[in-house]
Image (cartoon, rainbow, N blue to C red; front, side, top):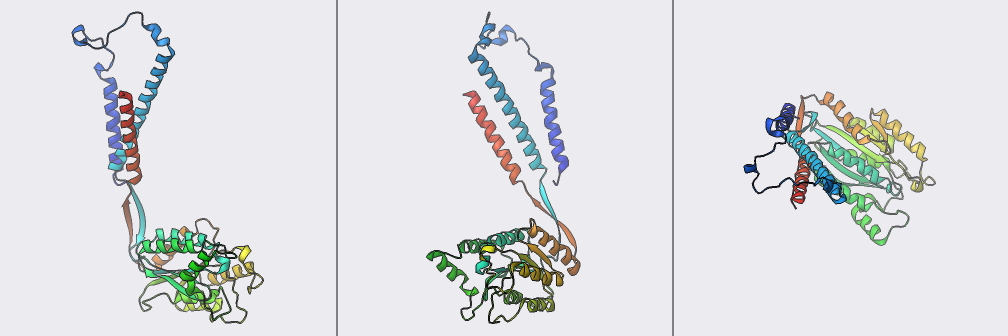
Length: 354
């Protein structure tokens, strides 16, 4: 909070007012004078037995619960209003040069990855929520690469495209409906090169993602986040860049690599792929770490957050720049709580009068 002292001051003031009302000399029960009584309620002789009636006792309990609920709502409303007045904020440290980054999200959309890509896209979405000013691109690939979104800082567009892509990939690769197959061909037709008898060309896909960066002459930090199962099917050696050669290309261009491995054993194609799932995973891990990159399994919880943290921790040192603390006001939750408390209080008050 920007002004935590204000919250404490307002709460103390509210508590003081309540105490004064309870402890003031006239707070106790006093018998009014006959003249002051007017036409109001009168004492009724021999009425004690009325309080033993079930209906009366039920009504008294109801009134007590009502007053208790109203008291709780008043406290909630006071605390919420005081907290809003103190300006709750979210603080985040950030280098003023971190926006000088280009990041390419490089997604394998081959058949063996279809059921895993939803988790991959979810990780990508978590990453984008942490960005502020960086340019991000989304490239999908199978036997060839297709740029879904070029480098941009329009994160809303990226989120929309990833949601659409997730819908397209929500299919049964062994038995897609006609509509699903048609939509896949329309949306991701550029990821399939019909002249090649091959699929899931991880090396060519990674090399294509490396060419997605523009302004090669500028001093910009570049990173690729690769998501694949590394199950290459290339019986005729038609792939231009085997994965080791593609990683060498990244090294030459000073592009940092983050790899996320995910696989579905039902569609892995071990009988056609050059490597088993474990061999493909180990190759991807070795090549990634050989570039001083980071390797993750898609099941790793917090992979997206760790990638962001490592991007920032390393690139602040590489790029220099001053570190600043950014504060963002976040009154939304407290405002909703205050509104609910006030509305509930008004509703109870109206019901009490009725």
